[in-house]
Image 1 (spheres, rainbow, N blue to C red):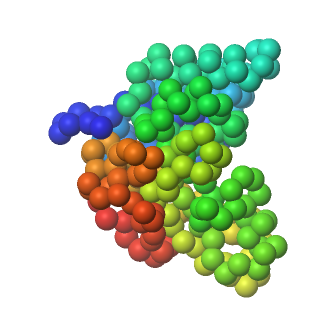
Image 2 (spheres, rainbow, N blue to C red):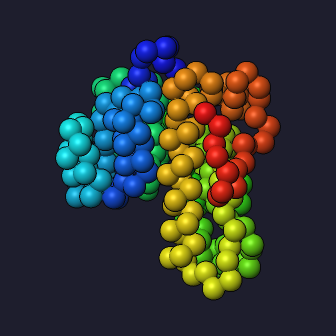
Length: 224
């Protein structure tokens, strides 16, 4: 956490265009989010988000898994790279690799992820398609602490998005992404302010254990 007047050092991991990275950086650089993005790291040297980050004056680095003989060695190198920037929080923003136990354990309690579903529903990939195929009437996004269990860490904040008649994957994904850009900076801000923490295998907000995530509707304001 950061104390009054300080900004929490953050490292953001991406694999693609980094739209959630942009939402966080823009608020940080506008002074409305008390974090300092120390670096943007990708597993893909050609990730579009790296070029955008450089255009905003941020340090960037890439580490391709193809350079390593196995996943364990890659995770070790990635963890060392991330740790070299001394982050108080690691933010996964569309990072598409599954991180191994050694990496997760090194940053447990100070690593967040955003997932495009209302967890614990629809862990993994292709969430929008699966929601539509199941005929569900609501969908959304979840911010959660990262643990060894894939998309299984304690959920902090969710935004619920109604599924509309005539929705396809693209239209539904676009509305969910809008909400991701709202709730991810909010959750990061809670952590930076010391309001949000991970302890005893659970998320805690303002000193209270979150047995259920905070849930907002797409039209709701998010409490600061």
